[in-house]
Amino acid sequence: MMGNNRKQHVLMVLTALVAIAATTLPEAALAGTGGGAFDPVWTMLTDWSQGALGRIIAGALILVGIVAGIARQSLMAFAVGIGAGIGLYNAPTVINSIFTATLPVL
Image (tube, rainbow, N blue to C red; front, side):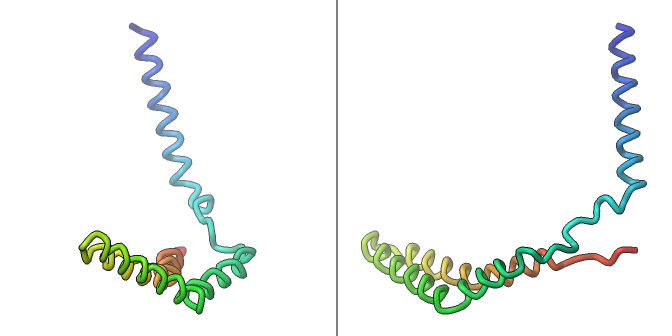
């Protein structure tokens, strides 16, 4: 019985030490502020999805949606095709908005 209480006490002390270390070392939490090694890849993917290739894929998705809608006698497949085309075109903008929304370092 005494060993169990000691284990719980040690666990609580270690948890407190980790919490203190996490709050006193805020610079360790700053990540992703540099490194432009993948910028050309991101630019290429953005150009593809919002350029001619993206429009071709979006058109193909809409055509597949139309065919699937006719086959299933439902407009839902057509709506999914339209949604996929819109999502493909707007995905880079949404991703940029999410990852560039930063708070200032105090």
